[in-house]
Length: 138
Image (tube, rainbow, N blue to C red; front, side, top):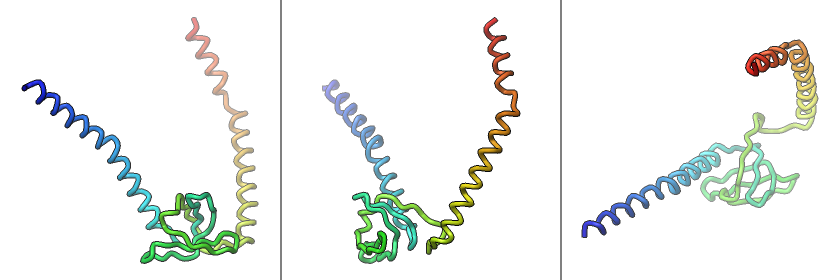
């Protein structure tokens, strides 16, 4: 009789571990998803579970729907159909602003490349590392 009691206790422990290993992470993931859906706003870029990319036009919390502008075509989806939300800093994207921002970003990237190339050329880290390796080999 005592052996079967130990077996029952072991089964309860195993099911408890399975709950914490499987259910808890799933609940946390659902919570993160709900938080993402609550924080989305007009102008955010989204991707649906079907892979459709678009920009949020309107959100209807009571009906749990969202209207998405996909290249001038307005489509209504359930909130559950949204896979990812990429928040944007500006609610109304303007083509002229994005073009100038892109060139500024490219120039900044070019400046960063030049700066990093200069610092790499000027550093003597590689020679000191080689000297350390030579000392370790002895």
